[in-house]
Length: 419
Image 1 (cartoon, rainbow, N blue to C red):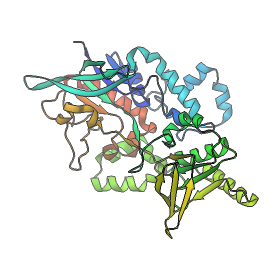
Image 2: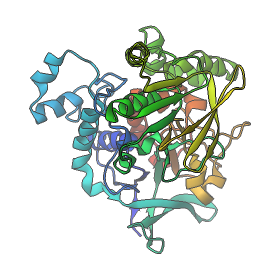
Image 3: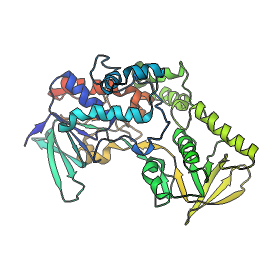
Image 4: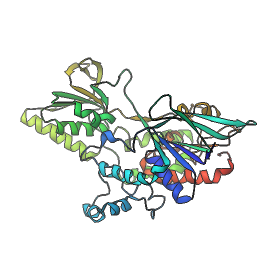
């Protein structure tokens, strides 16, 4: 059986950046498996007018290699828009344009990526008690009976984020997570009322989009805060996303790690760009002046029941007063969580070391610490906030993280265990 140097699980921005780093660092026999039919990154939220929340300089390569041919500026030149973008005077391209950049960067790697291929397990190959290879079991073409096995010396898990729905909520014809928004909207014809649950950037963007897309519909925003919280993107706070912040966090005590995560949650979680907050408030106020409220804000509130219809019961937390809303759709913009790498690793996961809290023990180079008999490299992109901090899992750090993993794979051809 052919033995690959590396198999990547998932082919979103993280493993795309890794493919580029491997190409630029030297020849490595790598193959990537992606369960989607084509390259795509949060397609359901590519809303008109939405922009990236990170600078275009934090693309797939620039922080690692400013001279790379895969940078955002190279993309603009290739598309014939470099001068136009400069004249635009912005550091934050539209989300639609950045997605086009990602597709542009992914195109040259088509021969290394097998789409419609879902990894269902990783099996250690043991010879004389030593694991030098891993067998990756792949379901191809979306058919349960089409399983193939590929062998590798290293595996890199970058399976992306999983949408989160509140306990008891089940996605259905009229109840969606925000990640499905653009796919679901064509089925929503002339709605009278749509309910949006959530207080973060996605919730505000969905509320804004629905309010504009359906001028005769009532849009009800439900969240437990009194108002949307502005994202802290000030210059000093943004230092949490500097490359050195990963080193600082990784070497800190568990107490300091908890403090840093709590202090800087407002840079990333359940927060909204101030410009969008002001726009929604302006609209809400003007509708009050006109006496025709289409944008209804149920603040300090929570959804306590969603019955058939859907019929949504909203409770105002300070008083317990309840309001029943008959809706055409309910959109939950309730965030994402990193998938658990152990669910993909299968038998190989039994050879991985865990921290006292049950999380994976991960080295600074993103290599999972393993038992002595495991000589293969198991790397994780994402799901490292507990060890490497906020910065490590986000687009801000993608280029550097990919470079560090590529360097580690090259250095660990002798299968030295991580420290």
